Image 1: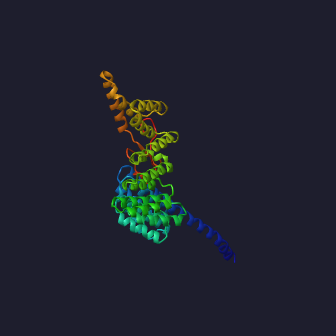
Image 2 (image 1 turned 90 degrees about the vertical axis):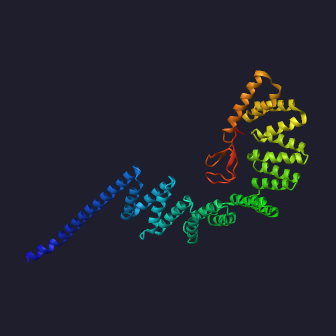
Image 3 (image 1 turned 120 degrees about the vertical axis):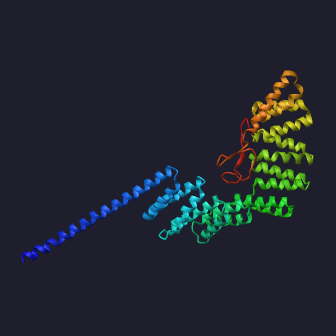
Length: 390
């Protein structure tokens, strides 16, 4: 009886001891696994720092099979390879992640998006397009996939598909994409104009204005179409509207506008418009245009006096060059030689300067682009205002 009592009383204690022993064994195993993971991780990191990327990838891929949390590390690593131009390594890594059977649907979608970007960077646009189209069809990360598809269609200059997917993006996100769509219609209008399809070009411009009533590029293309058809009075109206829509594009608009003023014999209107611009626009382009107008109408002395007075208020290297050119004929001897040197120096200064800059990414350019070559945003390339530029 006493023996039975002792055995029964020992059962809970044995249970507790067994539970405690199992915990200790589990902890040791867990610690061993963590130690192994830490060792592999630092070994892979060492390979990466020593530029042994292939060995690093092998180690990190092995780690992914141990621990689901390392998937995000792999995504970051693949992004790093792509940014460094090692697209083949990024593709291998992301393909491996996509093929893993235990990967969640959400992480698989992210890996597919990254793989699509790899394909784009590698120039495999057909593969990227197919992948992103599948994601859109599955409604998986559709906004991101749609944006990538729009980028592909812009690169391929397939403006109709770009417009279609931009409108789908608007519906999906509620964001206003009409300024970008207006640019796509302007691209179609300009292409039609170059192929002689002038009625088609005007139809596309109407669609651009429907998207963005103050689209400066659509006004400029309208003016160009009118000028090419010798409708210079209508061209003047369109070009003036372009400047009023966005005065920052004045340097691009003034040359054809001044030509249409002259061809339609509206130089008094030109003087009035340019004089009004002096108070609204602080660049040198209207000053130089008025200087040429005064030279033709009132003579060299009046033009030089006007230009000199303006340069005191708004210093400009381009204005200085115009002043030097205007006074060269009146200078002789050593002074003329010095002015020739000064003119060459100012010309070299202008030639070495970027005249335009993207307001989004800071990309500098000597010529104007409607789409930034760097960040791919539209209508962000603007003239640089300063002594050595506009």
